[in-house]
Amino acid sequence: MTQSLRKCPENFAETEIDDEIVLMCLTNGDFFSIKDSALAIWNLIDGERDRTALLDRLAQDYSVSEDAIRGDVDEFLAAATAAGFVAAD
Image (tube, one colour):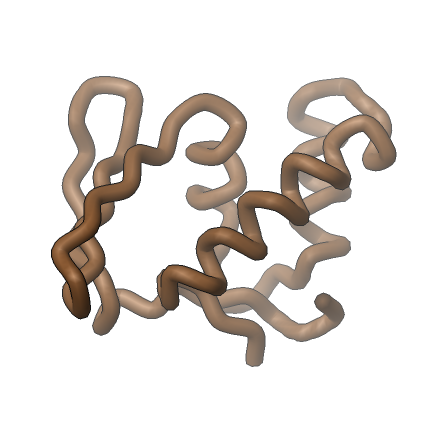
């Protein structure tokens, strides 16, 4: 993904509980829990960063290589996009 990633708040309700964010899909009522590394990714999705910028920032924040986190980031973005929570512009 080279396009900016943005959250699609029209598709979910969000609440923070302790160290996680719980999303409820507004189309089917399913709940999703976002915590740990997924929460770090979620918090960086701001409508300005693309996938590469997310990888760069996370690699810096956690002192790891981009290769070490690429799979987790891609898996999260694929799931969040499939659920309608994230879109690329």
